[in-house]
Image (tube, rainbow, N blue to C red; front, side):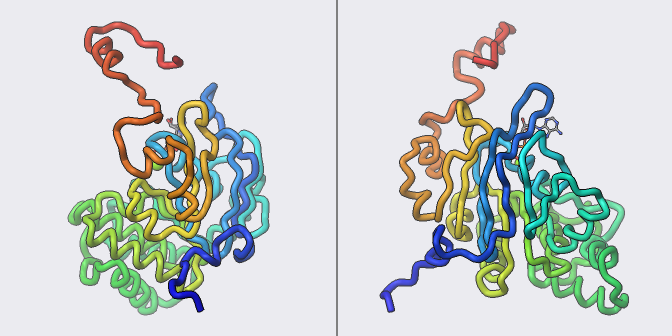
Length: 290
Ligand SMILES: Nc1ncnc2c1ncn2[C@@H]1O[C@H](COP(=O)(O)OP(=O)(O)OP(=O)(O)O)[C@@H](O)[C@H]1O
Ligand SMILES: [Mg+2]
């Protein structure tokens, strides 16, 4: 037995479960803007696959393609071995029962209570009796630390609480695959740790697979078994790096290093340089294609 246990050991390229998401050469254009430009990766069963990258680089767009709510310009996406890019809604519905999705905005229905929001996927996708639905809702709210809040409306709870309700809803049907877009943004450090621990428990102990988009590097390194970073500048729409957390920490790419260290100075191109900002204030035109 080695003295220390490497938690990433089973997630190196050699030794992983079967692939349950396979994205190959994914391209997505909006008008003449190419947001995803040949993205290829696989997520294997049991992975906590973290997607990183600057604001606006295409992370949420990538997730929306994987869940089938956007169609790619070209390329292939397989979920559980099935090509979803050409699937019709009815067929997609069957696949969607197997995964939960936490949207970046939370996307709670304002007219429903917290409990009714969490109950929604249970009522929609299963046939269980109301008292069992209530029990399932209570269990999921307990998981995210919100016991007793089921009768409040989304407008009566805080931003961080809304995020946790959205997570409880994504977990309502015990999905084998969870997509989370910024699950910890707006949470305090303690609640972030609670949500991270929940993700780790569900994946490492209960065998769920998770795909998590996050800007929070502490959280990313705490939960990830594999990580990818989407690029900016010349590498816009492409994967700049992929690997285990250790490989990403040691990766030589300076943009990646600047990102994970959260440094203001470095090679990541910013939209407005100081000079450009002054020009904007003075009303002069800037060519953003530069
Ligand atoms: N439906 C759409 N129509 C046109 N452009 C879109 C559409 N959806 C996304 N985009 C563009 O795609 C780019 C990537 O957006 P996306 O929301 O995926 O970024 P992100 O990486 O999730 O950013 P953030 O970290 O700020 O959430 C943006 O420039 C956005 O304007
Ligand atoms: Mg986003």
